[in-house]
Length: 221
Length: 257
Length: 54
Image (tube, rainbow over all chains, first blue to last red; front, side):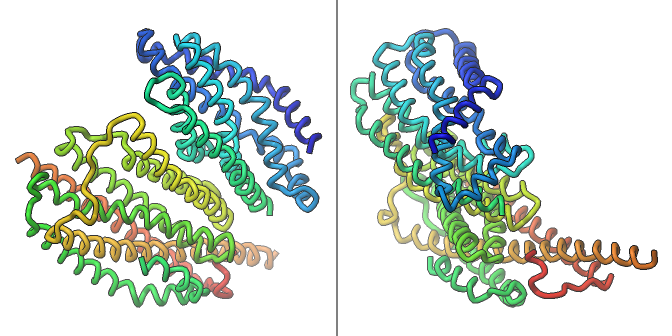
């Protein structure tokens, strides 16, 4: 399992600078927003956490369709599925998700504070947003794994993955943004939505790999 | 709700699609006639129903809006049960059931959204509010569309049915989360806009037409669903026969040579 | 009186969508039935009831 993690991590870093492209996409989304809503700094600092979350969500979805497709093309997916009696397939999927998250989503979380400065957000809001992103983005990757596994045998599955996955990520977005607001706003609580966000991540850490493993098994037999 | 729970039992009995076809042929005229009758009674009852003293005559929209919303949820539950049937028992009729239900459910969900927004415009003064119920129903609509897209994306019907079944079940897990979370989010950020009164608060003069209409639309749903299932079975039969025709043509070409 | 317009509009749209759904189902039914008949007329028969599930 360690070997699989390291292999996937290396591949993700090597494949066309995956992490860098993700950050660039994130940066582009954030840069476009002030052009859309106008350069009003007060407004930007108010909607900043939401914009960061949406940007991170879109950037995290960007590379998801490659999660299993690359393995399918070079045949290693079949090997992984066949090895299911030695390592449970769900665990394999979970490790792949973790590798993908570390390689291409963690840099986004690291870049978020910098982009928060662009949005004129106060330090506590930046910290809160980065923390919620750190806790919440694994859930997006895990949900996305289900979509990627379902669409793995499709020739042009990339768009379909986003369409399938986006409605399912709504709760993550809601609690992530409300916790990020809770870090700054007066009356709003921080801990409760934050804990629910963590609970959602743990919940999908169970459901996501199970469903993705089932989908992979179905697509190969 | 009794019909929902009866469905899988009936499906298990009808292991044979041919038996389902003959049963559907027998039941469909009756179901269609019954739903037309109940809907006609419900319509006259709702036209004669008194106007609400607060909402005026827009309360009449309730008689179609609430059944649509209810059916959109019931249809998803039915699809989730069928998805279980697909994955656990690998039953071909369960695929047909889920695939046929998806477009009908999407249509009912769209109608619930449209009528709700037409009700909201005169009552709240806006077409759309991002509040708990509207948002969760809208997400439900998106999930219907995703399932339809996925189940039409693969060529092999059995494979696409199983993929769609996994998605349906994952989505079903998500529905309570969405409902709960958006409720929560709503109370946090904006004062809850006054939705309709709870079921118990409805006056009997309005409740009875609503119940009759709900029954009528439920019957209509099952009529449409059965028609769609029959079409789907026929479509698969046509595909199988075409394949056989191609094979036959291939053989007859090969023999004289 | 604009309330009447909203009520009529919502009933009208519902009727239109439902009729569209019924029409689609009926047209689909007709297409599949004709195709089945055409194939059966060609003398192609399903070998068993299970043939359509492959």
